[in-house]
Image (tube, rainbow, N blue to C red; front, side, top):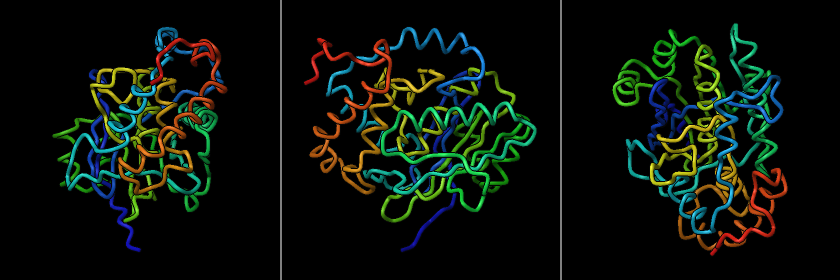
Length: 291
């Protein structure tokens, strides 16, 4: 089977106006940063305030609607819309090019650990073996962001990226003809502020797993240009746990997902409830209308 692994931009972030743009093609580019589940230092105050104000109760329809808006389509479109589920169906192994940024590498490792602990059925980890990796994260100084993009994507596409995305950080995925993600590439600025780095990392690392679109009509997700989190929020845990449920497979259509969703969502609710403290996940006695 032919596999096209050319890297094309699909998401980016800006320092002042947090933007993530998705480009639908056989390969995608996205942006991300991370925060660990057990951080080595006190939590960033901006993240702590957002976590305290986080909404955690959602109806079935709110989750369903968000999943279809975020997991299908793309914010920037360069070829015909896929209209299919895109996800890894193999272990995700991330190689980090950290250069002289050991602290950021450690923070990224915490992000990966946090995601692994919150997404059921997802086998994700770091590797020191580049050849074993199917996901690469490049941590670069902000001044080298443009040259790194140019080296990865070529001069013509780099100009397009700068014109349309004006990125602070960038990521991309490559899929095969069965819509299985086979490769992901991410560029993160090591000298961004802590909140920006963490917010960017979480969003784009997760987007590189297959929740590709950004949508301003979903106010509870980090995959919204107007929303900044800096941590793995409960709503997006639902989206990722739906995506990585074994009953949701690469290439599935909206109708196929919709038919499986009632049982998949029930499993996602149980998992998210079990792994989050009571203040962050809906309780057994929640009065929220889930229908």
